Length: 235
Length: 235
DNA sequence: TTTTAAACATGATTTGCGTCAGAAAAATTT
DNA sequence: AAATTTTTCTGACGCAAATCATGTTTAAAA
Image (cartoon, rainbow over all chains, first blue to last red; front, side):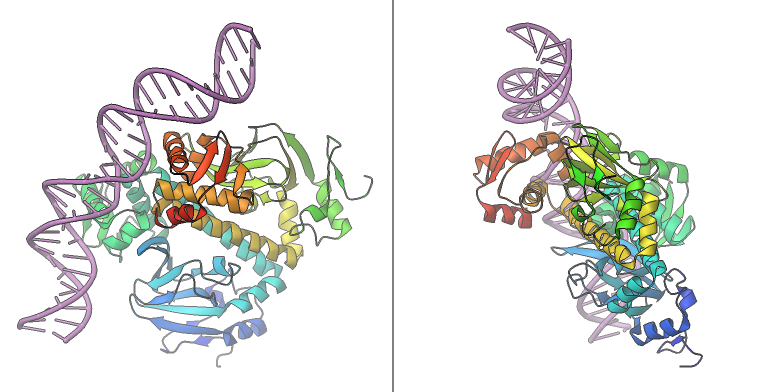
């Protein structure tokens, strides 16, 4: 390995450095980072490939190097998307003590590169480094808080409010802009909002007709943020 | 303090020993346990008293010494009960890194005794004892897995299935028996199932009429467990 | 390029479930 | 014991949202 402790991806186009995931590996010594690398793989995925499957043995924690994934719960042929994961983010930590099985499935929404670390390495890091353990707890708390907000949105709000929540989430947390290309299909949007595809399409059209957003294909622009926030609050 | 390191409750009827919460304080030295006690209080609550309030500064992690509590999310006057907490169980860990505020409210459903530990003591234990940190992560994972199961139940199942889930949860996890006195009102049951009080009452009546359960007042008995599980699965 | 399959779109129909109204029973309080 | 409040209960009604049906557009594959 040269330079030392840098993971060369198979495509030779990218490298993963521990600094790319400061909350996770930033505090490791080079020796430990090297040890992590030995128990890891880095894979390239095409669009719509499955990274891990709900219920399967939990073998890895995943770090997204590039691209966008969906983490979702499967139930009777229906999918409920729990979160979208992008470059610099990780997932799978919430399954490491879950009866050895994955709580969620994950799949790529775009071509993606994912760095997978063996679960036992992570567990060991937690036991050895209090700092690593604390970071893990902070991450779990954050994920949990998001999930709770989603429970409230999904169970207490109706379609308009849920869709407003989703669009605001995209603008604020995913793309960091009021104008974005949302990469995902209406069906995924529906699976994220816990509604039927038809309803998702209908509501996006309504928001467009009411000039609250403009949407052409997958290009979204928030035109009236205040009204959108009001829908999120009262819809 | 005498005997040393045992918290004498105000009522002088009970004591809290670190062994009562083996996952949490079992591994502490007597010296550290003594330190925990110095930063804790133990309070008696009447029925229907609020232990902590969603959105308030998160100051404590709570350990239930006796009685039964509900942990719930408030939204526009509606409550969604996330979990019931009983003797030997704890809550509040999921709020310790949540912008300093409580993710949930909690209230007593029966008279209850609750042992509250200062949040900074918990954070410190996490940093000092890898074992304590690992136990915390296991607890958070468990709580998270429960929450995910509830998301699925609440968003993917309809009323019958949700009520079946709730009754099975009471029998399996809370009372450990197919026959139990469910202490809580129909309203709380509705808040746990994410439905209106009228619907909860109606469905319990229907289950009773169909001889799947028998219910008189608050006394519940599962008569046809297979059918109840089938409702949970397909309802 | 042609064929096939997804994705997007929209109207019509059905239904699950919340809301409303009103009453009986049970639990608290006076 | 009486009065008041809370909880339990039941029917009628209305609506939000899923489902169904059918067509169009876009993207992928042959």
